[in-house]
Image 1 (tube, helix red, strand yellow):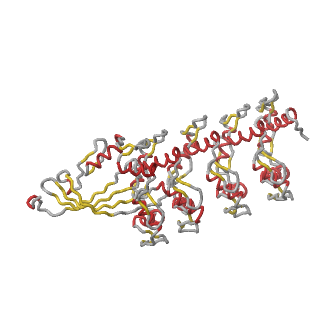
Image 2 (cartoon, rainbow, N blue to C red):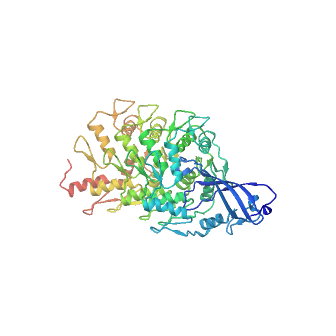
Image 3 (cartoon, one colour):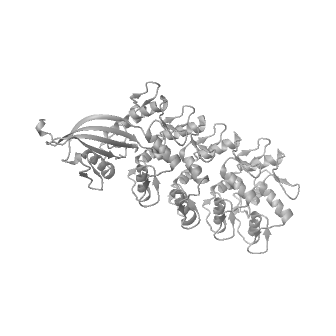
Length: 614
């Protein structure tokens, strides 16, 4: 190229920012390019390109990997539209949407990723397809060949991608943490880490505002996903195994690993735990092994493993800010998802999620998942390391271990010696035994309750005929599946799975064993009557004693006569015996029917077994 063909003007600086995300890639990459260009009259442009690859934080992964930064300088030549390299002009317009770009290759990828769904690269080993050849190469190494070409020089760590190795070295083999948070002890290698940390934990700054609601976010990508999830029906990523759709490719990838392939690529170095996401593994190690809680509340001694826990703590205990107001009641919520669930559960009764095995419906998809495991598959994936106990949910296992093995009850009642495993239990205890508060009101009668579950059961039992659980052996129906399970064991199978450790007594329910042990094998009766020397194993017994022996209160009134009773059960028995011919309990061996289940139980023992009542 001759000197005469060069333009008279000097180099022009053009900055270009590209945030194109592809559906088969982890949606955390932002390429930031700074170009120094020299234009020639024949249409060729010589470009000096400085690239920064920024890994933006993924809020679904608990904001652990915030950013890594690689700088490369490359020399390339290509032909571009005349004048576009020296201005902010983006000559390539998408025919389907408003997207514009400088490079035609970007446009091609955009159209395939967002509109046509074309994925020209096919995996030779499975059904996986991708937009880019690089994504296919990484997929094959990660899922089929097991090849991990990038090896740490200081330990045995290997990885598919070079950027993973770079993060590993920075995290585990260098003490270089130059940036100090001005508000706390947090240190970071990169300014991106520090910026997100300060916004998340100190300033609360959220520079991205949703144009359609009050939602704000720290990241532009989070805002984009919010708009797609809440203000459009666009969920471009379709699961190849089921009908699930996702806003982001990362969500779809996690769904497939969690629900279909069962792949858990991250192995805990201390135990057998495996996880789908590295963020989950990091939380597991801190929560179960190291005890590290790096996130500190600036107002009290609270510490947490994850920043989300600290955020919830701050909003719950140190601010009255609950920006979302329910249009039907006084309920307020911090998150739109909580408000949506509240409205469906309390006001519209909408239950969009249907069980594929029965008529059960739920407000949330996780309720369906737990229902299927509890009622249909019997799957209990969480195993206690100390005994044979298994549970559907990890939270149940955690509470079991604290209650039965460690005896850890961290929540102390300020009014008495009661301690609880969970803060919710303590809150209920205080309202039930000390303050008398019953915040949940029945809209159809004067009934009030401590918990929303009690109110829901009351409405189903007294104001609707809804009893969704049908006994397969008789006509009995129940509001709760747990009630049905107890009914079947008590009236049909006579199974008593809970054994007293001190004698041969067995029971249907674990709480019966607990009361039996307190009544017969210990002198422990923690509930003292304020009027006499009477003590009770249970608070309900003491309450009945006080009403029956001291106050004479009978709060339960029969609507058909003058009968009053101390307990709701007494009123129910009275109504069945005197005001209805309904005998819902049918003997499986003969035509006998009974008003109450205990009468049926006695009948079966007397007439259909060798066991006699004494």
